Length: 180
Image (cartoon, rainbow, N blue to C red):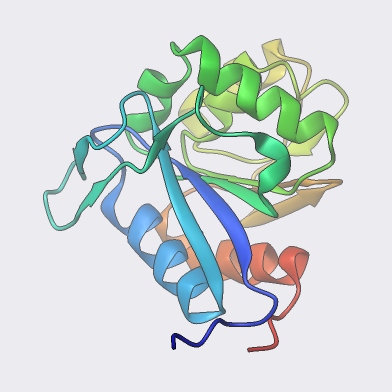
């Protein structure tokens, strides 16, 4: 008989080819160690997804069409080239908008806020991201600040790999500590 962890929470990682390796691997590992069940959602189910540096590979579990935002305790969007591909998928955009409307924590690092901008969830929000997308964030109604991590309501954002410790800390704080 298998033992089941009590209070296991589901977290969705939105991922496509070319993500920033550490921005996927480090939050993923930390959330798994903290007792969360992870689903990797992409534009194709069963797709092998390589990081832009080639140090890690993950396989997607579901497409956004197959997933329901309300089934997750949090959404994480790693940066790199992945967000530019994700934002072109209407199902991904609808999933993020649905999660935001439900108040589900959404953590996005580096280029990750590109998906938030496309989903229309930045109006009136203060956030950070890689400096190269400041204009995109502001055009979507967000206020851009240059800090290692910003928490505004359900959104948690960071700028770059060096900010990962703060990004992970705030994401886990939003989820709460798992008792398992």
